[in-house]
Length: 383
Image (cartoon, rainbow, N blue to C red; front, side, top):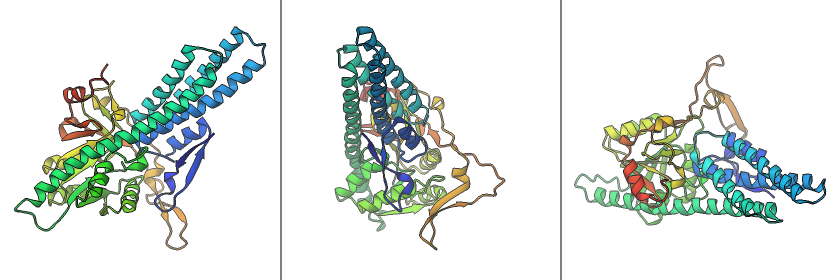
């Protein structure tokens, strides 16, 4: 059995499918960013537990077959199975510490397995593996469904912006809604549709004139993935240097900022790719609405204060080197851009406090960034 992923390291210049057949391979794919994006990491983790369950079942059956069949041997096999899956869950959780979807994916599939084992029966382990597969698929389908739904809610916001803009006396011929986004939060980052780009796709498909300013998003240049997605969909866009956003807002060339998130607290603080906080500050200073789009699987109901979110620190080489296609031979090259002796810091994420967030676009509608508003919108999620 294998799970197929798009190996995003090769985009936007080539499209490569990678087969993942073991827990270890899935952990490597997540940690080394063969795949990335909060939602997709959660889906990958869910399927990682499923792949681990296959190996764990094989190990449990092997140990059971070496002893005469008895209630005690069945109990031993189940104990071996549980221990292997517990270890698998811990291994997955260590891959990327910031995105809460990873934890949710592990917990969802692990919970489905536990329910089957608790029900008992002679074929409980086999049934548990099947339950893991079904739950991983269900979790992934939910991700796509929720992202599509939040896209429709976000589309309504963009449509309202367009109606106000074209009806304004100061309308000066810039016949579109200009959206600024940071990092990549399209369908590559989720099972489908995406978060920040889902409203853009929905608005474009509805005929609303739209243009996207795409932050390049150093150091991994995730803006290239956003540009690839937008180009594939036919959406007009312009890639800009990360530091250009404030200028564009100040001169009136940005109507709205929409980003995704890797974790949003129960109080509305939003953790996203490093540099998002600066965009929110610039938006606030220039009266540009700043929205965060996310499925509810990205909300961490256990944390209210964004300062408690763990911030991943990645390797210095991601800052010191850049990769791209050589004009000379068309091959992918890695180039050192800093002095070899210089050190480099590489924090992967920052937290935008709720006071800078105009609203949270979710599958159930748009909410204020506050405990009260999120609790009212998701009363079933609050324990």
